[in-house]
Image (cartoon, rainbow, N blue to C red; front, top):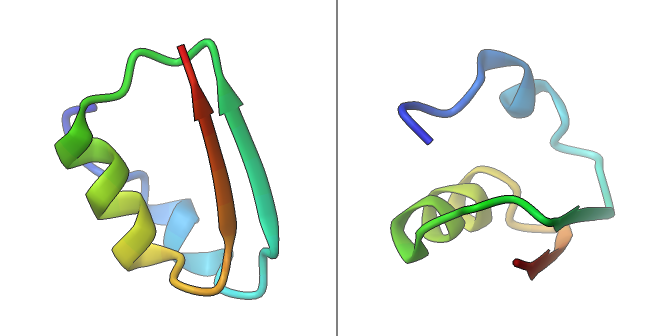
Length: 45
């Protein structure tokens, strides 16, 4: 992931997101967790 999409910052009330099948690095996952702290994020490759 080159950079976090601007729209993701508008999803602060999101409670769950499933990102299965996406080739995300540990750094990408960390960025998403910081951007969406109250969201349960499921990652599976």
